[in-house]
Image 1 (cartoon, chains in turn yellow, cyan):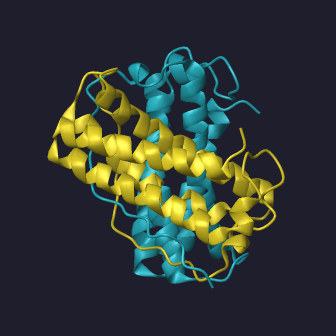
Image 2: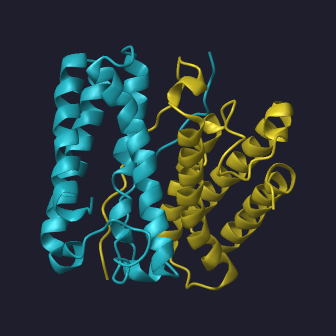
Length: 150
Length: 150
């Protein structure tokens, strides 16, 4: 058994005044940042998904906590898809920039599903979690199919 | 000008029932996760630090939002310093595991300073932010000096 540090969160709506591109000194910094945010998100989502699929024992509190973190993380990567960051250590397809509206729709769909998962996990209902995990995974895949290189 | 997605956060104290090591399938997964969490934390902390040092114009809302995210991220990396993850693509020194209590003290000191920075940033006082950025950076460095390879 081990206590892990409390994860303090506070409600905040970020509206950065500066252009997103100004937030990263180099395109490579933006690439590293968005991959990192997605890694952290995927780790916590994966723990909930493992419970949903029966690969891990269901622990309602762990499911709720991990879903809450995944939900928070899901907001972060998108501002880092800055112009010029299609080149480098990335699987991002050029369509992200040539069809920005569609990319935004796709990632917002995922964010919406992840938020629903966080709500479902708070209820402690494994059936609700299973449904929400499936919808979220589907939204991840739908975006990857179009916007991520193999 | 660009609106960046809202970053939803909710108060939560994580106490995972499973041993931390069970949360990662492989030591390499734990290494990738903790480096990712630190990268996201450092990116947001860096934006506040840039304002504190005058390298970026002071924007009170952006400072508060970025400090809140850095504060949340500061809670995450430590559960990923699992046994066996001293080997691999990591600069972690063996002392992290041989002197776990000292490592915990050092990372908790950083977490405390980052939380104080988030509080300071909410006040909108640049002087308070400068002081808190300095204390936080000092806590980062103190831990790196002892527990991170060059």
